[in-house]
Image (cartoon, rainbow, N blue to C red):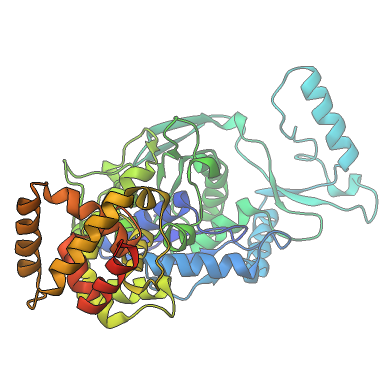
Length: 471
């Protein structure tokens, strides 16, 4: 393990060159759950060494997305860019102890080397030309990089918690750069040093990083030889998420930042948490799993080896479940934020039990509630307008006259009244409800028609009916 303690420590280490996308959010979740399940620590590191592409906006979005999902961390966030001196220190230690060397190869020499390898159809890798040469052979003052001396024979084996046993021949790993010519550390060095210094025992990340593990282990083992205490971490490389078509997930599949699912699709955080949990991990046939249950049940060994497929409809269905389960006051606040100043929170909360039964997103919930605050004359959907022909408008006039005589403006009384009217006219209740719904809401979908009448109140409901009736 990377730590002298037996306590599990996991880390999530995003690069702030973009927002927190679905794949990154799931990696963060699995790390967090593994730490919580084992009573360990979850830590966060922002890998912001790419100064040209890293932005404060992306950092803020990542932190906001993690907070929205309810993923908290046990230590202050580490920013990799602030640790360059420590990274360089390790490179110098490796150099001083013969595990690294100065390479004076010029960019042109390296390009000629790669061109020759391409021509010979050989793998493109550094050929070790300065591995065993003395620095005195270089021109005085010539620029150099520091490269790691990787093993040239044998093989490296990783017993990955997800992928199983993976073996790579050491000759396939070239002597890669630790410190660039300007003294800045490379990603490969910085990650290893930070993981060690943060005490990370388990490295849980996407399987696109599996090759990196074989490049990072030589640093770990060299440092362990030099000063001890640099044990191999335990690796778990989880498969990437694919789209429904089986291709690697991209923006066309819905690989957006988590803030887009919250703000543009109306997904609740508990629904996203549950959905990401089930992307590649499962517990029998259980679909809905609470946060506490997830902490209790989660085991990285249960993550499948094959890629999981992102299914937006399934996410929306799970979201619908959590909307129905959510507290009405909370939903009222969220819905009012979407609707804006026109929203009446008191009325919204009264309506919420019937509004939330149909919605699969907070946007649908807000859309379904919009009729409550619409101003006459009501805007009509094309489908609703088509229901209001001359015959329907005449029928609305009769409904208005009938309802004006109703003194008990309750669901039960209104339902009894209109059912009696339908029987008198020898019509199905739907023949009354369809134009009535259009007149009251401007749409063809809404909560139950009697719920709508009660929620709008007697005066507003009759005014809307009269506005569409042929009186």
